[in-house]
Length: 433
Ligand code: GLU
Image 1 (cartoon, helix red, strand yellow):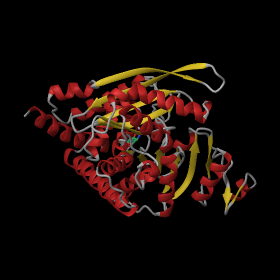
Image 2: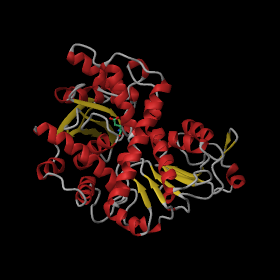
Image 3: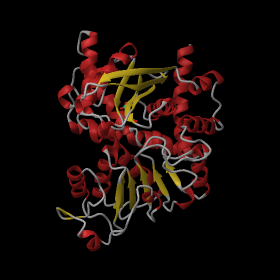
């Protein structure tokens, strides 16, 4: 963890500061304001399972249902050693805001288990997920709360959630969870949706800024599901990706990484990015000199001399410690909450534009909404339809955020909050009527 000293990894405090800064521009009814400052419901569960060696281990699980004014609670399940109640509260709050910005009929929720998934076998992960689902069973359902994947969770894990829920419910209800595999009722395009959504947002914003994307240089922190799909789309659109990093290290090739696909293949085989110096299909440390590559630490990726940095890993990666060293003029937040509140004020003073998480990474939940709809209507849409609907959703949300920023003369983050708060207020008013 890299900690800003003001809020020592307390994303919930960061989230509330962001809300307060948006509220300074928007008179929210005090009752609604108070509802948003306090989640509707928090649930903490113990999840004991038998490990492969016969021992018993108990894990700590969480689900926060932040707000359901606009529809069922919706948001992912994260498996990570850093998961705690403050993190899950913040992530649930950001889902409420994100779902309003991208205009899907959901409220916000989030959950997770504190664990290092690399230390568990597949069987242990399955038993843990099924037991966690049993604990969540009374509070989830297609019209109540709909989980999805997040960090270290994937379509297979979502399949276990759906299957366990079906057993307890006595019937199949695939709409209880999204991000499932196609065979379990998942949607075409869901896996690439967050990365592709971020690409649509960035492209539209660059148009608004009057910038030509071709040749712009990019550094990406995080090469999981989100970072890798986004990198592919940026490469296709002619941007130059010069650096990539994962939790173990990274690659920095100032002239541009020759092939994202080759690096992906190399990471898949070797389990890490470091060392993936690929020329054609040959990925070898021997190529390092040939490519003019330079050393890079996982943190170093964010302070490189590039046009755009993309934090696509965890919270708090841009803090008051590194904000002054950031050289990029644009930050595309693909992680949730990567920039601390203090870091943001530093970046603002320095004229760095942040394209905020609740807009930039909303493509995942947008396609989750399409999946949920398909499940409820017993339909299967083709990929072309899903991706064109995704593009439309992301473009509309980006336009709304951009015009709010112009109208109120505020940052893009404040503008995104204003768009969300206006929509939440509408639901709040009609719920009262
Ligand atoms: N975990 C993703 C997010 O943070 C997706 C949530 C969902 O699809 O419900 O946006």
